[in-house]
Image 1: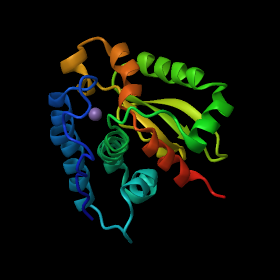
Image 2: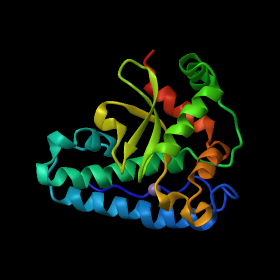
Image 3: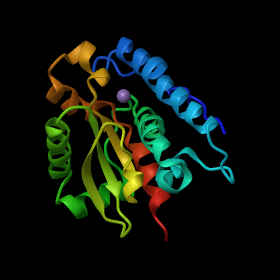
Image 4: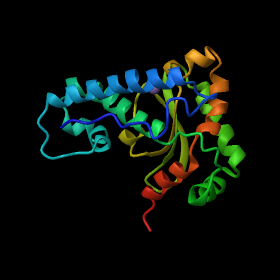
Length: 205
Ligand code: MN
């Protein structure tokens, strides 16, 4: 099995001034590509019984891979799917929360502002490299969670709807140590139409 690097659904400079072109280029062409290459290399080392999606492979890492390979798949398979989510739901759409996700965020967190505050606080306080996600748990409940490194929420049966990369490589060229500014600006480049689509996929009538 071999996975590919998805093209960005927008130009490298489309997220300016919030995320600069050079950061986007290096992040996509070098970092994302490297996770993908290492993930594909790890997959060459095993014979899987059937075709799995990258998400399924990460979710089932403990049953599909011998122990000495699991961390490589968690790091690089996780890195691959986390970045797919991240790049896919960005854009300079300048749109607002909409649809069912808006409704359920308000129901769960009390207001959009409360949700944004909780999400931003998690992103600003994640110590070291990692991610902040809005996820849906097995009962359909929305939650804000942090994860270290490239650990995917899927390993804990949580489906990510929004993912914010807070590794320094995601912002350092433009923001240096000012992670809080990068985090606040995330809302300017999040495409809520894509977020709503991600959420709809998790809803079972
Ligand atoms: Mn990254």
